[in-house]
Length: 256
Image (cartoon, rainbow, N blue to C red; front, side, top):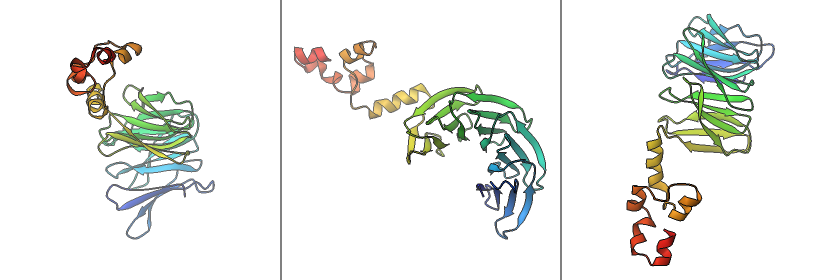
């Protein structure tokens, strides 16, 4: 068994097998332990299987380079998502259930229209296999984890990278958003998990920086960094050393 997931109401579980002789996913009734549907359609072992938010659909991924969409009640195959060039490791629904993101060993993630079955965007940027892909709670961002030792945050509509999360010393096997969407949690083969802050706007990043930095750069440091030597107003008003510059002697004032 390679994968298992609950439905959102906890009534059913879907499982997927990595056995080369058993290329099926199965849906189970939690209370009775009985199989309610067998999902037959992949031609190779499965990697992942998850329910849609409403529990009516299931998406599965496989070594056969496809993701398949199923009716979770009848077990009927609804459509195939074909486009990846190698194994598809992961698939996740958007919070509204209208899109699916898949992650593959062809170094890409793909966003699909779950209703039409068409590709919305291809997320190119990783230099290694993409192991994990997940939507943010509001559906406006996607996080991916890769064998290139990085995670990325994407704009799924535009297909563009918003941020590259560098810090792990090994492949990143998983990347998920926190329930409030303000953080990303990554897990790696380097035996660590890391939490990264996510800022939806530049203003949010600036506000956070104001709270956490112990002081602002001096004028000399700003010049060395090719910044305007005049500090922002909030630095002068709130942060050392600028608030004390007018009270310092000439030698110390020069450093400001």
